[in-house]
Length: 92
Image (cartoon, rainbow, N blue to C red; front, side):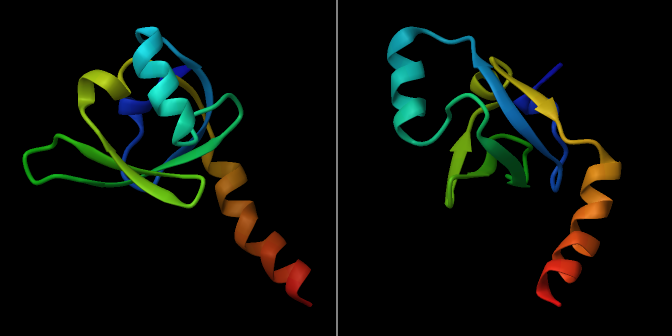
């Protein structure tokens, strides 16, 4: 298990839990940060904070402090490498 802030740009994971105050949890859940959601680290600000994450078709910037309180299960590189070939198979 890892936290969202551990994901490098281009890496993705599946959201497991939000370990934040209830008001912040509710706000993030309304934006798609719900258990089992797929999230990807898209880009970081030049100074390294905040990071923009893609989730549910949206791009959301989170500070490191907030992202460090969101537990994710990283999607391993083997799965990521298999996805393009699976997409190509499906397109045939």
